[in-house]
Image 1 (cartoon, rainbow, N blue to C red):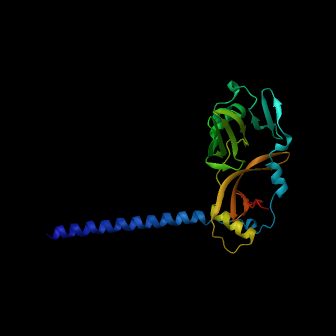
Image 2: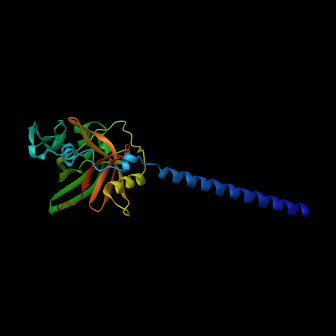
Length: 252
């Protein structure tokens, strides 16, 4: 009988020790997770008063050259950007058998094999104007390793199942590192410091890939965009440098 009691005590003691060990491990994990978000932001990143790029510099690197108009190239009407890449194709005068049948075929044919995998359809609109006429407008956005690439959403339009136009604002990326050097919390602290905010409750922060001026061309940059209302700040996700301001007040 006494032996059974001792055995029961030993079992309870072991269970208690096990639960205590689990609790210690749990607390340790929580502390480690907390440390990840309590990174030290470089002092220079918290005392910035100017951005790396002016609004004009950033705008020039992201400008669509629609004003140059379409140029006839064979059976296609084409708009190209300053680097010679196709921005838009008008298929209305192209024989039906020569038009891409799908968005994937459009991207892979004119921008390279596999490019279609970089785009996700973010909006689908279908309209029946008259009894036998159906138009479809699909809008696509570029992504890289699940990080949004902040090019303009692109339209591919069909009329009665035939492609009539296709747009593409494509930023080529290869072996691009999408690992930030600090967390969203760190980006928000930089934003608060730059914008002279005592507090910030919106938590509107997104990891993005943008293109920025690089000499006569442009290149990709991993960034955080932090927004408060209609105003935002784009911050280099590696150096903490404020790159440029954004505004979503289209009434300005």
